[in-house]
Amino acid sequence: NSRLQQKPVSLEESSSTQKSMILPFHAYAPSRTVVGEVVYVNYGGEEDYRMLAEIGVNVTGAIVIARYGDLYRGTVVKTTAKHG
Image (cartoon, one colour):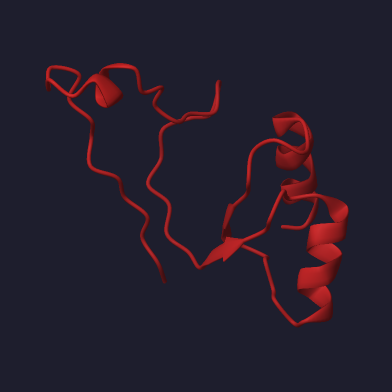
């Protein structure tokens, strides 16, 4: 099992990069601790999941990491849920 944790960013620090940083989140998602295999799914579209299945990657129960930009984020969530 993998754990993905990120050190909290202090907005008090002097770095201008950190002051302008938008912290990642998904609105309306509950706070939870999750444990599982981590799988990179490119943009998280149907074609990406099809390619992963063809090479034998099982995403059921996995924590997936998807690139942002090609698909609407709601579509990525829906497609990911469909694939387990």
